[in-house]
Each structure stands twice: as C-alpha cells, then as structure tokens.
Image 1 (cartoon, rainbow, N blue to C red):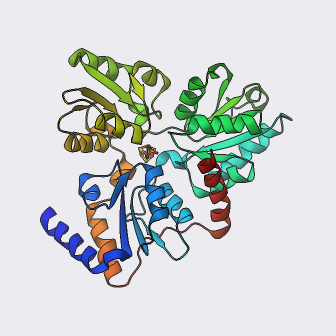
Image 2 (image 1 turned 120 degrees about the vertical axis):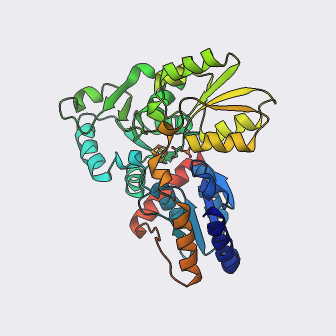
Length: 345
Ligand code: 13P
Ligand code: SF4
C-alpha cells in the first residue's frame, strides 16, 4: 500500500542523506511530487539541477528533461530517471537525422540565413544540431525572445518540434502572415522552395496532451461557470489560446493561481496532474480542469510510478546506480552551447 511505500522511500532517503536530490515536474503524480525537494517546470528544474551538488539527481519527469539535467550538472553527478519508458512523444517527433535531411532540402533553396530554434522539449542531439547551425533552445516562457534573437542573427526561423508554440509565438510578434508548416511525414506537402517564401517554418510536431483542448471546452466552462477565467499553455492550438483569457508557461499558470484572489475561478488548460496539485495547494481559489479529467493525462509523465522511485532509491542504498541518463560528451558540449545562448537572451 501507499503507506508502506512511503515508509520505504523515506527510509532510503534517510540512508542517502545529502547524496540525493529529487526533482518533480509539475505534471507528475502526487505520490512523486510529495517526495520532491523541488517542484517546478522543466526550466526551473534544470536550474535546480545545476545548483545542486548532490551526487544523484533523481528526475521525476521525462527523458529530455533528464538529459538537460545531465548537460548542466557536473560530470561527477549522475542523473537518474526512475523509468526509462518516460519519453515525451513530442520530443520524438523531431529526430535529429530527420531534421538534418529537411535542413539540407530547405537551405538549398535560399541564400538567406535560417536560424533553427528548438523547444526545450527535444533530445540533446537536436539541441546540438541547433547549436551547430547558429541556433538555440527556448522554453515556453522565452520563445518570443528566442525569435527576436534569431531575427537579429538571421532572416528566417525553423522552429522545432512544437508547431503550436511556434505559431502562438509568431502571432505574439505580429508575424503570423509569414508562417508555413513543414510536415516531415508527408512528402506531398513538403515544398522547400515554397517554404523559404516565409520567415517562420514550423516543424509539424505537437504535444498530444495540450493539442486535445478545443474552443468548445472554453465555451463550455464559461457556460457552466460565468465567473471563470481561462488560462492555457501555449502548446495548445492557436484558436484555443485566442479563446482563453490568458496563455502562459507552466510556471505562469502556477503564478496566476498563486496570485489569484480568494474566491476567484480559474479553469486550467494543461496536464491534469498540475490542475489537481493547484487545487490542493490553493484551496482558497476555485481551480477547475478546462475539460474532463482522464483525457488530459500525459502517459509519458505517468510512467514515473512511485514503485519505480522506491526501486531506484533502494538500489542506490545498495550501491547500484540504475537508469542513469547520460548524454554523449560531444553532444553534451554542443547542446550546452544552445542552452547557454538561451540563458543569455
Ligand atoms: P514546461 O515544463 O516547460 O512548461 O513544459 C511543458 C510540458 O509539456 C512539459 O512536458
Ligand atoms: Fe511531452 Fe506533452 Fe507529455 Fe509534456 S505533456 S511530456 S510535451 S507529451
């Protein structure tokens, strides 16, 4: 049962002391975040990983986040992901080899300089590719600044892998007439010579959780709760962002509820576990899921089962390092360049 498991986790943590830090992404289950030393979005957690000098960073999150933690932590620190199955489908939609092929096709059609920007939600080899081509990484809270950087350094942007964040950012900057999508799986729709007529080329990836929100969900919540304010993540479709009162990164969503007045109603358009955490953490605010419960559950995040957390900790007590995430040294160095460029903007 849960009590017995909690006791085992606590016993292992007592044994390991300062050797271990547990990071919990906001979309993790309650049974994981309850044991976390730090809870936050992917960007906040990578900063916590960088600041920590624990030998073992246990990452409650998905593979790309554990990779980023490995990139920024020291070489003698190990990053451990309790389940190797926790892979974000969106990160898998832009494989470096596939992007490399598209890049060759697109850049052959123009003399203008294209700057690739990859969302944090991508693998280290793609971050390394972006660094090599003069590009950078961004998160949902600084995507607009990454675009501005790219247009200072070059003429066009290739944005990967999340087309919705790319489109929402282009709208925010008033360049929505310059967008084209690039679907790497559809040879018919791909036309590099047409793509380069635009300033913003969007890779056709998406988050299967956030993409499921619809304008009807916004309309329904307003019909059911007339005082409801609606906030959604910018990984949601353009029309959903437009229908909402506010769009913001995971951190912005948390801050919005934190700063709400008692009795205010906020409907949350993001992964359901965060909505539930906000309900527990801020009982004075009326926090509602923007649509039903189960369908907004991220199955990649869900792979981090508390039993696996128990297992990796108990193995560490026995001196065995399980599920260590290690980025290859060459990739690490380049991916770090792409991350550093983000930190500079
Ligand atoms: P952030 O944590 O950067 O907001 O990313 C959202 C997300 O979907 C993470 O999986
Ligand atoms: Fe990936 Fe979306 Fe799940 Fe985040 S919520 S891990 S972007 S699938």
